[in-house]
Image 1 (cartoon, one colour):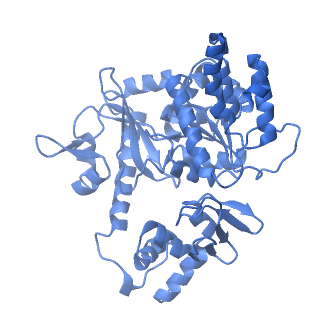
Image 2 (cartoon, rainbow, N blue to C red; image 1 turned 90 degrees about the vertical axis):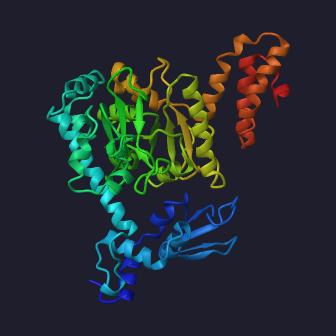
Image 3 (cartoon, rainbow, N blue to C red; image 1 turned 180 degrees about the vertical axis):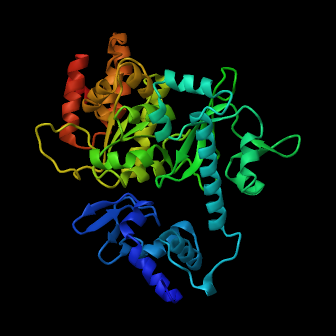
Length: 450
């Protein structure tokens, strides 16, 4: 117990891991005893931001910004020192001296109430489904059964059902929570007729947990064909930011560390089916495209930064794959080379590359959920073991259409599709090998292609 404010500050400093704190905002790469990354305080093109763990400090050797973990949090979150200390004291279970305590209505207290309401809601929805207390529980269970989801999976992911009636959840939660808290948590909406109604109705409920396991939001899948939209998701709130949270990370993070890799998928049920069938290191974005913050979050769990993209194999899925790869490359730019060729015959350290991007694209044209259920997890794992690097996936996707281009003019047009991919290869020797391979495939002179 801290007797004074200064003692409390010191106890918090002793508990903070500066590498963990800064890794939430900056992708770090270990070099010797220090960690290096791109400075978040100026437009840094080469890693000039150094973190020294044994001293508990950071310093940018370009712009001069320096400090400890507390200063970093204050600058990146724009939070006052006193507010930060109180927040961290509550996180670490430390008592704040009476003279520095806040009254009711602080942001922290509002967040705690929102988290509590979300947890009660998740338990309420889950109980309605598991104990079949709702009239449509049988329909929801039948839907889940057809997707290969049994009781064990329902329990693991806390799946539930939202009743068809307008105020079932609201009537339950209003006993313990204010309308303001329930509305902020995204659980109720103001009705056009006055009063409040449940946000989610007549839907399978997919609770969303943050990386600490707290329930912060919900995804909801329509039970009836005519229901629109098919999926309804919580909006961003004080406790939920979909651009910074990945579905399934809480249940996947140990496997990501163990496998030293992560599989990025598109939908909730892709992750649920895959994790349930033993492919445990997979996550998905929550109704939004992959963001730099998602990638930074994942980089904290995989040392090699080996990321597999496993989206739908249709044209929309291929666009999502290209967009995802672009975001990943943007985040790791400046930290070193992105792996661009397989070294099956050359041993290398895990930290040789800034990252490694591979694509899992089974030829059956199914999304991961459907593929795992119909073909099997073992077959999916086989495709994963043989997943090509993103550059190979790009070239293969283009070259499979080569027979459609026969005239010299068409071939010239076709080569125009390949050149942007080849110019991304920075290593001249590797680029020469790829040029030779492409030239042979197209039966053209490699010198012309160069």
